[in-house]
Length: 416
Image 1 (spheres, rainbow, N blue to C red):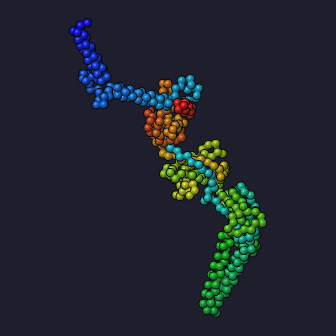
Image 2 (cartoon, rainbow, N blue to C red; image 1 turned 90 degrees about the horizontal axis):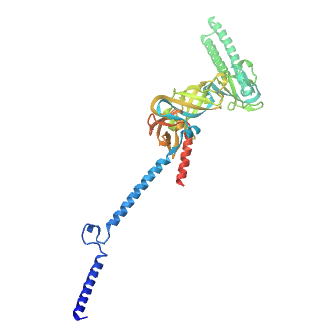
Image 3 (tube, rainbow, N blue to C red; image 1 turned 30 degrees about the vertical axis):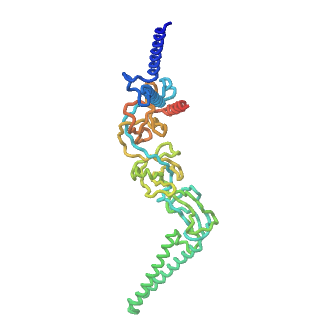
């Protein structure tokens, strides 16, 4: 090989080395220009990758939200065929207008009419000699109830008899003085003095007689210490604490007598409901011992709340035919408000509480869906729907509790 050939080979090797160096320098870096020049930032990061990553996250988030919404909707839906609905005893009704007479349901108790009841005590201190009636006995006006021995009563009777004697003596003295004055034998002032003494004696006798009458003591019994306690009116002995041999005075009741031809029904009204209650409003009373509801009206609403119960009393007065209502019986009272036409109502049994919200199970093509609603007035049979349901919407009326149970079961399975 001559020198010229060696020079040519060396030149070709140098060119090849330069080309290789150029290729290696261009390969790692991004193109300096062209349509993708704007994708590299000052740190050499390629935002094409970042855009793709963000887009992927956004699409994944949207899919997740759609899936969550679909799951929430499905959680409130219950698939059920016609055969299953029939087997479960679920009845279908339609939301519709109705006339609602709102009811306030209250606990109550039968009580004796306090205006026709009396606690009978001994008119004077003494000893019970005999009790002539038993608890529950019906008595007539003036009938003897108990016999008491009282020395003080004997003293009052003696006072009355003495007053009568003084009246008789004063009458005799006045008659004599009047004759003497008319005959001109005595002075007029003697006749007037005798007349004044007579009037004083009559006043004292009248006072003694009034005391005996007020205490129910027989004025014609002489100075006897025996006192018979008599019924002031016809009624029933509802309590008899007295027993023979008992020491008594005017502060200890011996018997309780009540006229049970009328009774009171006293209902407990919460303070928050007092605005709905007023005298004269109609009431329906249910008593366990009576097959039918009794009708009446509120005669009195207590102005004061009980310190312990924080409740007021609403009173209904009822005629007690055949004494069927007895004091102490438990009852319930429904106070009825004014009837009102309501545009959308459902059967009260259709309402269920799910997660502390009222829902109605609306009929769908696949079964039912729990629809949240806002409720208003109710008469116990139908309830007003303020929001959440339109008139004409079919829903589960009877048997909705089955759907509530299925809904709870489905939510539990979804949580697991």
